[in-house]
Image 1: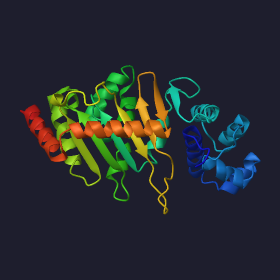
Image 2 (image 1 turned 90 degrees about the horizontal axis):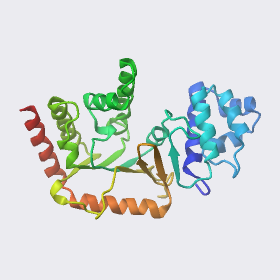
Image 3 (image 1 turned 135 degrees about the horizontal axis):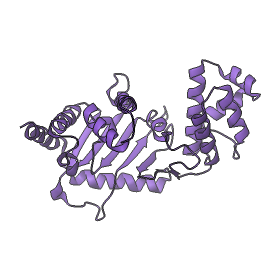
Length: 292
């Protein structure tokens, strides 16, 4: 992956998915776009030239039948392709409603995350997700809300599928359990769901109790470290990436020093958290209290 960057790999991933949706082969796309098959192969692997020609990306989008939003997003990725770590500001270069992260998540093998205030999407119940979605998109029609919730539920196949499910390591702040989203019935079902999910061999859920204080000395917001598995020789398929979400945009970090610092932060938070069995007991206890 020498010279590769996250925007380049994401650009290649979306081009490959578009081609597969059309059912076309690499030689067919190459002929229509007037590029060589080897060039298309390199593009799909994220191995673009140092200077990406936006005209090539625009032509590929046309050949692959990409809609206006997808075309704009891929052109935006191409313009940011040289950034090793980058900040995706909503509405800048890439359309605000184009979810770059979802394409990244689909390829992951291990997710390590800390969330101090809310249950992460991969562990939400449909009712919990619906309350958050309605709050986040107050002007949306019910059909659009249903679609967003359905998509979030579909994403959970990443950890529940039978064949090679991703590993999920999570620490949730106790505030996540105490803050009522929706009502007590929604919370009871959500906490029971967390306890049940924590029994899966590929899912680890720990709770950071209030009494643990602030393990790092400074408050830390939600972050996710994504890892993409290793090849036969033990080399990573792709470099790990740290994803930090904010209200106005997303930060993607892949410099080794940044990834290492977030791994160390997670280890410190995990060390201060309850163990898995105690966390599961607390979840079941609070679920019963909410039901009562």
